[in-house]
Every structure is written in C-alpha cells, then in structure tokens.
Length: 102
Image (cartoon, rainbow, N blue to C red; front, side, top):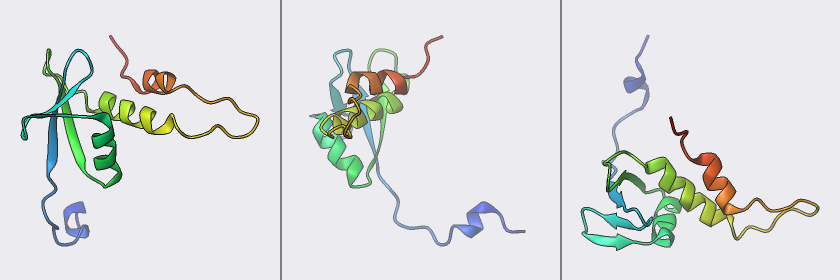
C-alpha cells in the first residue's frame, strides 16, 4: 500500500505563505514586506489562491481563521439576499466563525 505522500505526485513550486500581524484595532501588517495590508488586498490574494498566516500582535497567538472570517464576511456583505430571505449581516458571520473562548 502506498502512503499519502507517494500518491500526491511530484512536488510543485513551493507556495509562499504571507505572514501577517493583526493589531488590536484589526489592522493587518505584512511582517515580510513591512507594510500595512488592507482587507481588500487580502481578499484579492485569497481569491487568487494565495495563502497567509496571521498572528495577534499582543499575544502572538494564531488568528488566521479569524482574519479569514473577516475577509469572507466582507466579501459576502455585497451579495444580495435571495428573494424572500433576509441577508445575514457580516458581523453575524464573523461571530459564527470566531473561535470559542474558554
């Protein structure tokens, strides 16, 4: 039986993971390029298939999923609701996708 690595085929080009820091005000900073990153720019990158990893500036904890939820909520906020249904506010989507606090 072949293992998972042998079924994947030859490796492709290495995918660059964009490293971001999220500050207390929600702003994002690219730690490699040393510049701010807008949610719109990050959304464009995600649409293009780019990957990123985000860390909270104060705690250094991973917050990639929270940032992705914010990007998705922003992208979904312009989509019109189907006839007869109310739109789900983007804040609700972000809340639903946020990790549980223990």
